[in-house]
Image 1 (cartoon, rainbow, N blue to C red):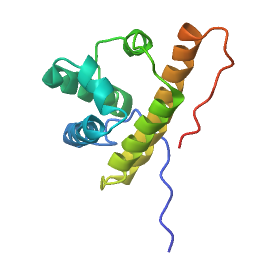
Image 2: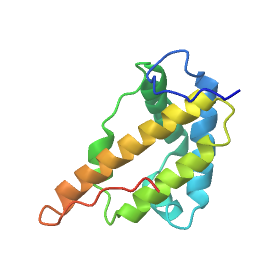
Image 3: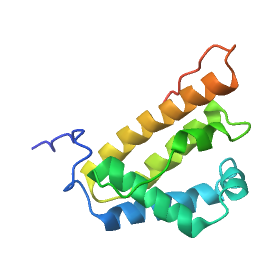
Length: 143
């Protein structure tokens, strides 16, 4: 018997619990902060980790469960960061997928991975348009 393939259903309130989202966010940033490429960037720009965790949990809750707790504008904050590259976005996606792969909820894993790829691609595209308007756009490969 084959296992049914997950499908993209986010946002959907029953996709996961707030506790699962909290575990995902904390586990991901635990990895990212130790990463030689991403860690220095996060440590230089996140001044209050407790507040950042709350924002990220609210963000992913909105994206995955359809809640309305998130308030913010991620795009301008990311565009303002100096020196971002496709390699950094690809590494972010890789670490995110490593984190979701350890979760028991396969529907959460699939939907979070699909959203991360979409979000990372949009952030990187906008970053290039704003920062490098004369360069050819480079798409993320999704590592």
